[in-house]
Length: 143
Image (cartoon, rainbow, N blue to C red; front, side, top):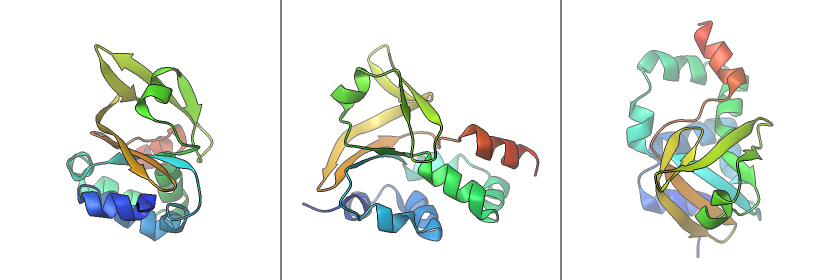
């Protein structure tokens, strides 16, 4: 089995998010012993962001780091584990809201479109929207 970074690369649906992770150095954490849970926005989710938003995020290292870390939990949480939670604290330090709505697992409103992609050091859940922590949202709005 592969680590989170390798598993995400092989899946081929997370190229843009993985590029942001590489810019922050979080790609190294995704290869660590973990365990970690990654809410990975697929490329379609990343495409929903405007070029200006991507430029703003990439141009501010703290905002970029906050954004990437907001997609990662410390620990291995399968979809079944997540369904039993209402919130969880991300590596960024803010909580994500977790709920099941009409049978769909949602993280801060983002739909989990593919759950439980396993890796040696954790699990990946593919999501259809980029998660934005409050701290990054404020920076992005002020640009």
